[in-house]
Image (cartoon, rainbow, N blue to C red):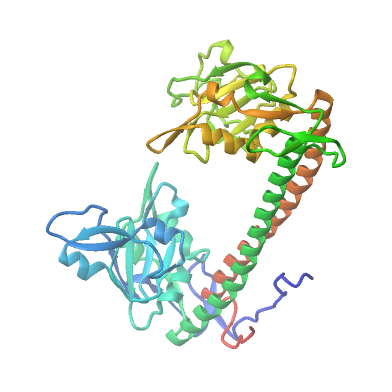
Length: 454
């Protein structure tokens, strides 16, 4: 077993159990009870919006995203500035032990996501789209927050949410939620245990996420080296004459990008809100140099000239600066009836460039950096037209070497991708372990009162 993997542990059950009377909860320890939230805490739905009005008090708001992305609400977070009435300040100011849960969302699976307030936060109020829950003295806020996230407990709130395109949870539904409750000292023990154990799991997840980043960095460096310096370290070199590039193999040419394609076309300017037989690509469908097809079509009448052919390239000509210039290779065929939106440009390679190699070259970080430096900025938008894009000078080997480089890169990138997939599966298992551990502890399936392991 790796030294970084969690050790296998067997948690013991409680000495005795009783039927909870709740189907989804099942049996609970004999000294536990089942309580509705309204007997454990006060529940108020926030009416403090994001506006700043004259005559009101300046405040900061803990909003939906603060709760959704953070299990703990602390003073380290950057809260939004707004104003509130005196009554709102008295009602919704955050105190240590308060629990905030999401009550509105575009997805029912995002309903009742909890966060616990870890310290008194003067001048910070619970914002709109959240429920503000203040536990009674016999209910420990950190335990209650963990209980909200448990399987079963969480599901009852998601099922109670109403809506079709947007879901909302009313105050009565929140107050009527059922919780398995041990005595308050035991709540504190369970919360402390979960804080310690989830921190261990989170640290492992962070290490694995960093490993994925390193694999991605390795992929980027490998491609950059291959398309700017070739694969033969002993080959004669010469000065590239390009500001952003040092030496290149002596036999390689230097050409402007426009000499490597035989045509370029702007995409469709029509609305993509409909349905139809033709799938239309947007910038979101270009991922890691590949084109990912949308699941359904959005148009029927598309000029034949704007249907993609195999090995067409698409580049994103307008977006934020960190996204403009992204390129994807279409590996399908015209018979698949795929077109593209107006802010994408279709490039068709000429005989000088193999499309798969051109795709690697255009996604090389050095070329991307040059493309983005040439984009014209307008407010928060970067625009890169083909005429500017086509002036980027790039190194180019002959076709045989392009094919060899693409195959070499493919083999190594495939290996790196498989490694990253294994790491992602490990992360998924750790997240499942984390969720299961929380659920087991807050519903009494495991007894952690005597657990003192580090």
